[in-house]
Length: 326
Ligand code: FUB
Image (tube, rainbow, N blue to C red):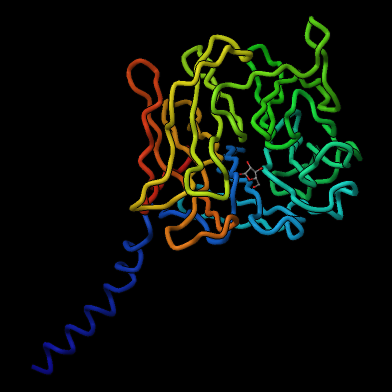
């Protein structure tokens, strides 16, 4: 009997390190990292995934942004305070919805600040860094868009690179969305042939959080609908042959699920480079929460049907499987 007990203890001592290895998480679980974080924008830089979210708190406390990186969508590393208002003199609160792109060896982070209204200082700014984790410094010393054009609040910018290499800024809150042609140095905009700099492309149902991407030669335009503090926040989309539309609303593809979470919206899209594998990165509110700022960053799979329509997303608790970048 004693022999058997000793043998069993020895076996478990030997085997436990192996078991510890095999219990490594293989699914991300939602949320993918702890804390209240909203408006997540995903990017791939080198062999890492990056998420740039809004720090979801009362406006006066939104004076910095954190970023998160991962080799596989499961293990996430926090990079605290990649930018804060001490580095952007005109920004004093409500730093929202970062959008980061890599260009010419630099990283440009576009963001909204101050929840600007007519006659106030604030709007969409741009910051620059040598690394994706910053530190980001103010690029212009003033907002890139500080005025209200076509009724669009200058927030929720998304930078889209067209197939001819032209960069566009697509942005807007208050139910209006504009597109503008970014100059190559990202210091301003060039007018369209009709002389206008800000062209309105608002589709039916649009509220905020625009995004554009291309797939099989088509332009997909996506946006958030509903109120971000409530349960019915959601995402809809349209497809067109040009970045200027016209964008006919197809329908909702992301929304609350009473068994999982509420307020699912303000998303970004991840296409694994070199594949047709897609993920949606978005925020949502736990079923136990009603505070508008209690938003968490989540990832789920997104699929297209044979006609190129986006299938409604099933939001999950378990999240996505590990997906290392190769
Ligand atoms: O997080 C602040 C604001 O909430 C964003 O700019 C909106 O899109 C909404 O998500």
